[in-house]
Amino acid sequence: MTLRTESGIEHTWRWFGPSDTVPLQHIRQAGATGVVTALHHIPNGEAWPVNEILERKEIIEKSGLRWAVVESVPVHEDIKRATGQAHKYLANYKQSLRNLASCGISIVCYNFMPLLDWTRTQLEWKLPDGSESLRFDAVDAAAFDAFILERPGVEKSWREDVLSEASKRFKGMTQDERDAVSKVILAGLPGTVDDLTLEEFRGLLTHYDEIDDTTLRNNYTAFLREVIPVAEELGMLLCIHPDDPPFPLFGLPKIASVASDFDAILSAYDSPANGITFCTGSLGANPANDLPAMLRRFAHRVHFLHFRNVKREPDGSFYEANHLAGDVNMAGVMQAAIEEVDRRAAAGITTKLPMRPDHGLRMLDDLHKSFYPGYSAVGRLRGLAELRGLELGLRYAKSK
Image (cartoon, rainbow, N blue to C red; front, side, top):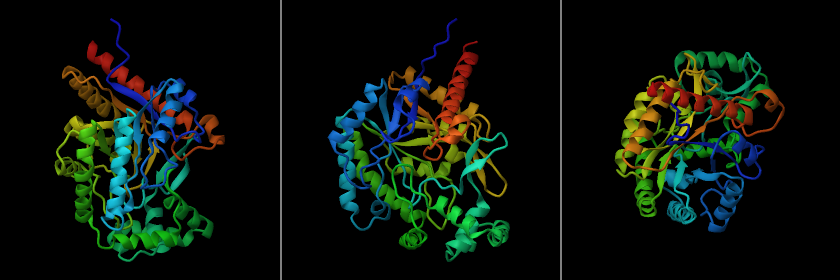
């Protein structure tokens, strides 16, 4: 028999726009059919103009690809804190959704993480084979928190053994090493947000002094009540990205880290338009998360897949591994994804479920090139190839 290679999973690739060092033609050669991108040059909180959306869409389509997912339309900090000009920024957010829908784009990934997006302590961590990975070192993070940031109440946020080791490590660091850790932690989002200074971060943290998990979840529910009816009206799908890492950092609240969080998110506004970006790397950093079980549990509301692997360490540290080489049961996750797209096909749902290889090791010629952290070409090419092979192999085994 001939095994069908096209499935209900669409293979996509993140692209940061015309300034990205990975051109669209290379993305097409990698085997992707869809592009995941955003208008990173539009300031956070402003509405995205139709002409800007159409211009980006035309560039993508001229390369033979399609704009499959928006990642992301950023949620302004005033919305997260329900303060300041939140009303204005909510109106702009809804207008961005309307403008995207008018241009034929229907899936929007976003996050509700306070102040920082994904947090790492090293961006060029050497692996034994010479490739480079992104790493979160819990001891370095604790050293930053306790002895550089000097955050009040820090002792409540870290295990005693981690703080003890952090004290020893901090004392042995040179000033350059301390500055390097601070720079990585305070780095802005790739292509979107400027880096923060230490004083800026200290000041912004005070805005969350009275905002705990419950308050942030209430603010998030208020956000959903504003935007999901608009998404429903437009036929759009919104999907929240999990916290990365999926545990508290620097005293900031987290509301999208474990299965119970996603139960709360989906029940906060019960609508197909209110969905999840299922990121195996983010969720996989918490050993309590059973990813295949979580995907099966929430599959009906998963609108976007990020496939990335991590290797965890006992103290809470982790690094990003090759896509099939870490602690995430990627075969189990892929099997759950296949089951979901097959279920949708049987139900007459013809739209595909987009998936992208999330991050990738820096390797081969890319070691000498410049990329946004995690977004080198060859590492993601390897990841996409491995994931496509895994999917095809599982389908072949099922057909036997």
